[in-house]
Image 1: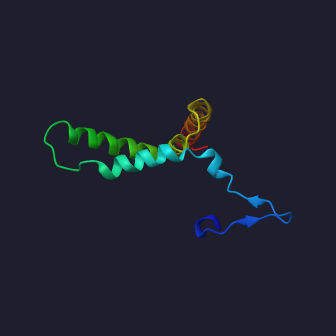
Image 2 (image 1 turned 180 degrees about the vertical axis):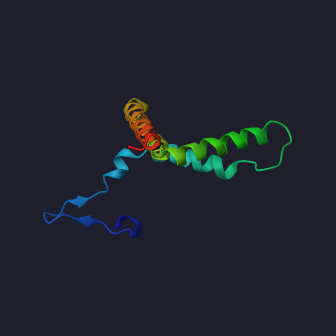
Amino acid sequence: MADSYGITLTAPDGTPIKNALLEYINEDQINTFSSNVTASNNGTSWGLEPIIQAGNIATFLFYLLTGTLIFNFLYLFGVPAIFIIPIVVIYFILLARAIIALIRGV
């Protein structure tokens, strides 16, 4: 919190305390994504664009309904996919078990 106000926090021995998240987050990649979003042309097209946008909305709704949006955020923060994929596989197995139990009324 102090970083956003420009205040340098120090430990009792005088060493500066830095935010650990800044070491893990790939800021350049996030800045590239945000500049692409703000520079994109949002004009109306009658070609393939509405279909692509509908697919993007469907993908986003899938992320929201299954709870996997957080894994997309992890990827955007720069976590390697080799760490995210096993967690997603385990998550989907547990989600399938829960849905089956809900259908069976367990």
